Length: 258
Image (spheres, rainbow, N blue to C red):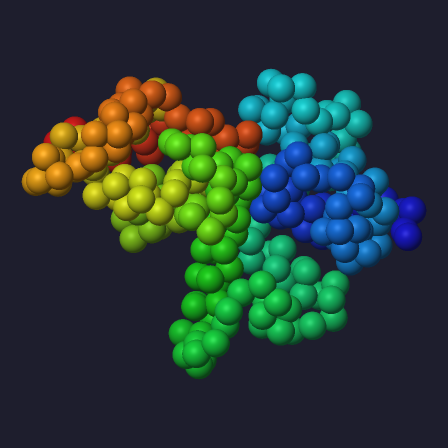
């Protein structure tokens, strides 16, 4: 394993993986950490330390006493500042670097994690590859930030969880990949949120619309109504990283109120 100084490329890849994996899972014994160490020529322990240093730049983590800002290098700060708020650029740059370390072409590297079947050719193909990289980054980062728990119900069955946009993919291009524009929701509540049948205020309070149950309220099971009503005015289960942006929540909540 290398013992020389970290490079900007290596730190970029670690930042990318820090975003895409639950923070508590970064242990030197984890297979994905060992694989990342082999890819970058670093020990698993060095990967864990670097993740801790990078995490310390995020205010939410810093408030929890996570990270070792006193031990971070200038290059750590440069990489953090380069990509924080520019997540689409991080996703593309990191995947290109990962392919480079694997000594593979980008698409060959991506097929290990992203389905690239039936893509168009030429310029459209490149745009579609970029879109899928960004979508996968957003999905994994949002779910990982909530440690794979639905932020309304606490359900943690990954097959039932989705990364929902607060302000939609089509409506806000600048925040398409922004994890602070995301909520980890189970399938039912993701749809309900998109349809404004539930609302989430900028103060993270949940509101349930009277229209949630549909027209035939008398057919809804009593225990179901009791459970849904218990959610009304409850607070969100908050993520470990990337708090939902209050301004974006306000935009969506205004539509719910109307």
